[in-house]
Image (cartoon, rainbow, N blue to C red; front, side, top):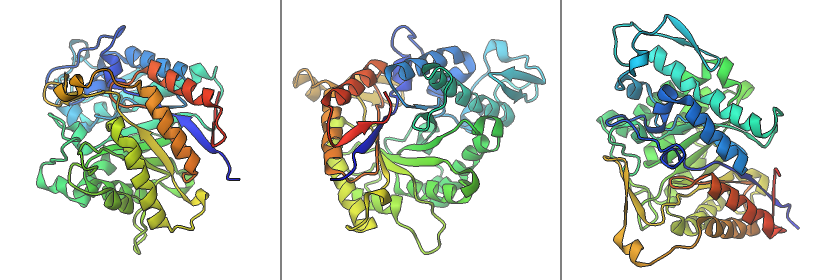
Length: 391
């Protein structure tokens, strides 16, 4: 009998949870930072959301850096209280270097320091649940969204990247490497990063790019587990750039003769309609077996990382940052509860026994309550095919 598949729980939709009571967040008009803006305006609010997810049973907490970039902070006006910045100041244990006081936006040093403050916020949330104790199966995941997620309006769902250099693997690799090194270069906070998540990637060139970045910078002596997760908004189960699942998995896992690409710890699907998820996972499995070989042992397979959205037919407008209802979905009436549908998919996936493990959570429109319900649903099944790594 095959060993049971371990399951870990990821958190869920940070930005959309911020919009709900008791937070009732309003994101700044014209800013590309979205939830990362709260690193400036209200880190305590972010901390509260992280802790809510940890208390709900999330083993892995994503940092509030999905949309964060030097360019995004450079285009963000300082809040009134931030206009007169001291030469140095302490923010959540991270030394923040200021730029010239005359500037009304955030310079590279200020932006980098603010971005790093996301790590202790996530770490503190996990430790609060664990009463200060470390756990091998729990951790902080550095959230690094697609290049398109940092644009205004965002284009991670369309894959329409500008300028032209950002349509190439090399251009995207240079950009991702710069952002990755902001975190890796500060050992005071980097030590608390357990995973790195390249998520919601919409184009094949970006999958190539992040593998090149990790081959160069994720050093063996200080290696982090990391994953690539793609978004599939199209009805034909392709990326926004038209790439097939076959091409996606091939690019995620194959090892070129040059050896310049590092294979990720996990691969998966996020910010995608849950109705598509089972078909996508089956296609992933077929293609992982093809790339690794049908006789590859389970310990050679990556982890499956999946966190579908809970929009249930709602459609996100990237220009207005608002949600609208798809009339066709509304006409179909109430949807099946998200946690029940996802638990059934994960159970069937575990029964097939292919993946080394499964990391599962939620994306847009999913909340701490959804993670709590998902965890309870999977725990109540007492299934022979899987086990929950933590209680």
